[in-house]
Image 1 (spheres, one colour):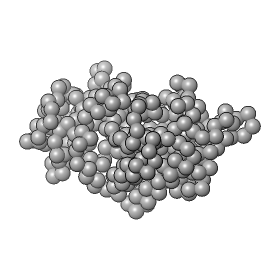
Image 2 (image 1 turned 180 degrees about the horizontal axis):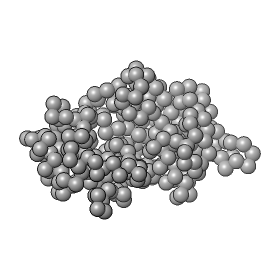
Image 3 (image 1 turned 45 degrees about the vertical axis):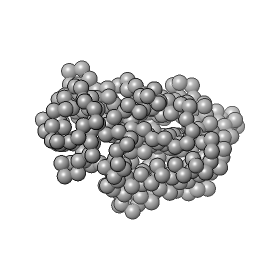
Length: 293
């Protein structure tokens, strides 16, 4: 599992994935429309809404003496390309772009003989943005929580999860791993956390959770090698929150009376990563230590 196509490798999470894999000896191809500000591997410019271009990308060999010369079929595909958040483009465009590009990547990868696809789903499938008027069903939120997409963006991710389930059923022996990523943060983003401490409701919408881009990349690498078949989905968050207050206190203030599935100690994440820990061996390495850490 050494030759990897990463779609969206120029984006925030994709950059971290490309760097993480390259530093560990993988051969990586970044498939994106834009160049990465942190290039660590070759770029192939592809419009993922065009199936022919995606099919070509899955069988790209590069030029003479190119490191991808023998890369006829990738060992796996990591699909991170998407319009990444709600409310930045019209809803119809967000939905159409995300659904079509995901279908094209999944289908082209399977046609090329790829049997493992790791892809970026989203925490938003679980009902975000949460609020006192739209609370989670319980906490900590886990993979059994009802799927409640509230935007065209989250609906595109919800339907992509169903797409993965059905394509895995059509293709026995294949593996689709969807990572329900929390809000992706890079190291420079931690400077913003101090400004959120006096306003707990500012981050109530995702239960004060986040995922360090480097730990998102770790989750991808583990997903490339875990012994699974079929379609599985995992919440991926860091083990603590963006706040210095205890998680139980935050819930009591903002979501009083919310049913609890398990106790929360200290600043523990309210998006449960127990399944990712148990199945993938995921263990966050870059938790925010707090303003004095």
